[in-house]
Image 1 (cartoon, protein in one colour):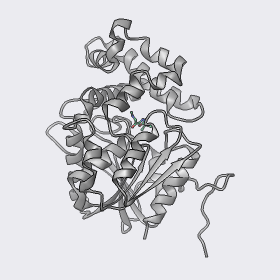
Image 2 (cartoon, protein in one colour):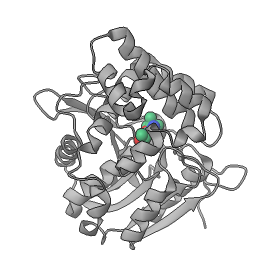
Image 3 (spheres, helix red, strand yellow):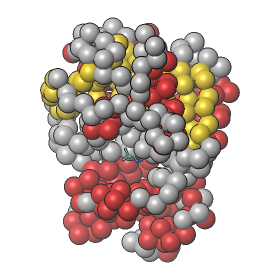
Length: 325
Ligand code: STX
């Protein structure tokens, strides 16, 4: 008989129940950085690593709920400088390739040979970067809201494209920056987010973070917008994101993540994309799907960017179920 799953009124799958970690730990990954990690579910289950977004967004309890806790051993960690990892908001020795190396350290520390990767947004970029460096350690990938950190994606979200859809929020995003610096908004924010005027730093961090908070979901979500303005969250989120994007994701060339897909194209995967995703528009997911025929491509027609969109949650949970046994 079919197992009964939590469903929404529309018949969509909902998150798995809340889960408490059976293990929490910290791992020193460099002379400076220490990362916080946690494990939930079944210690003997199939290993799955969950990669959070931003970069700098940190993990949250709902990310534990994408997998069936009876069949999976779910591992989550806060990437360098955010969440419970230390030093907080540090940009030193904080690059994509440091994070890829941290994931390998964590895998070895936990005694895992191969694992599933699940990541949305920046988490999808990091999952692709890791899978391209270490394809032999990856079972499959479940990716949502595909982000390849290309020039055109950054230009879309920060340089005016998305502003056509959210003019009032974009005006607030531009407000801390003088008009003569609007031509390179990421550089203008970078200067202020890494400067030593603390008041300006916080003001810019909140404006940067609120722009994303306002555009993440298909329908307005005032509670999220408030939480993105919280100083502690905003300082790490904005500084780390801006540092990564100012440095174009630390990739060798624009589009490297898509160009290197052949290295991992034999791996199974699911690409889940909201049609009305304004943060990471569907074009990138489409381009990834074309280069990766062994991945199933699922467009959700009534969803924006965030994993909490009902159609995206449904697709994510169905995807992890499909790989559970
Ligand atoms: N950043 C997209 C991203 O990865 C450009 C992302 N946006 N918000 C998040 O992640 C959180 C919800 C994890 C904060």
